[in-house]
Image (cartoon, helix red, strand yellow):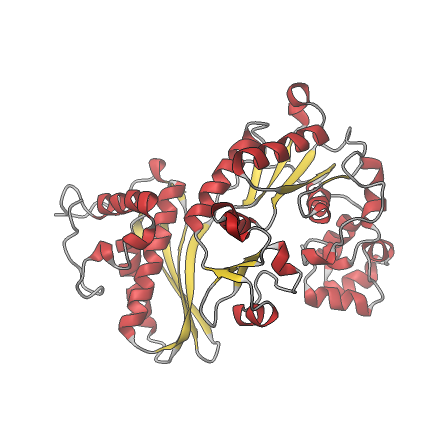
Length: 419
């Protein structure tokens, strides 16, 4: 979808919280400024102040901004230095993904209490199909009100909900309802709702394609719906033209699918200053492997393919991957593979960014995992599980980078510590 800020709130009174929802069983629930809101929840003294969550170094980017910060032009994915220039008096906080994940689980459970047909898109948004929940909980708009009330009461957070006949329109509805709102799009008013919206509100229209469409005189979704198909095909290609034409006419047949399996889990870091020291790069790869391993274990997943991403000082980006014989969720195995890939790659330049990703995921309980000949009965997996428990109780900062590998050279293979 295009940039959400292109959809203004308010406008046509036919689209509000009290529209005809009889043929609009799809809900899109979107948390409001989620990361920033979680931070304000645990620091009430920040309420009403501009809060920005993101990388705190000079090359960091904004992960989330409170609505108070957005009034100054601060947006997600903006360089943190630009945000500081726009809003120097904001409170800048590093992200705490353990807290956000815990809050997300609680919210998703509220949604699943309504219907099993919940399709999470990320930590802070999900689709629901509530057609089968009407007899228990009432019509879709009433269900949406109940969800919003529970999220506010139980989690101290707000969310916006779009109610519509399809996923695409429901997502647009929640965007237009923000913050802390509810919008119903009746089935017989979908085209009235869509036509005035800008073309970059369509899924798949980014800045470049929006610019192309505007050059053709197609500024709104209504303009695109009426455009000759041949002109769209010439400008965008057959597949994109067909996709956007269908959306512009409100046609989106996709069902809510609760079994969305994450295809990969990864993490990356942008250094505050370009790095050439191999030891510093090894430490960064180790910290990233630990982060990915912890996320895998929380998700109950294991993976077989380890990949690394390296961006040099001149912005050249390269990646390498290696598939393991047996799936794993341990940071030690991921780090050993990542470091071997980096050593073979040998970029020989100053490094701006490194990343580690595990792909080929599968449920841990259904997948055989690595057994090493001669390894102690209790080894790295158990040690990392203990570290997970300590991090859950005291915060991951008490564990510290490379703690799972001891104090020696992180490139060496050692016997694992006993938990």
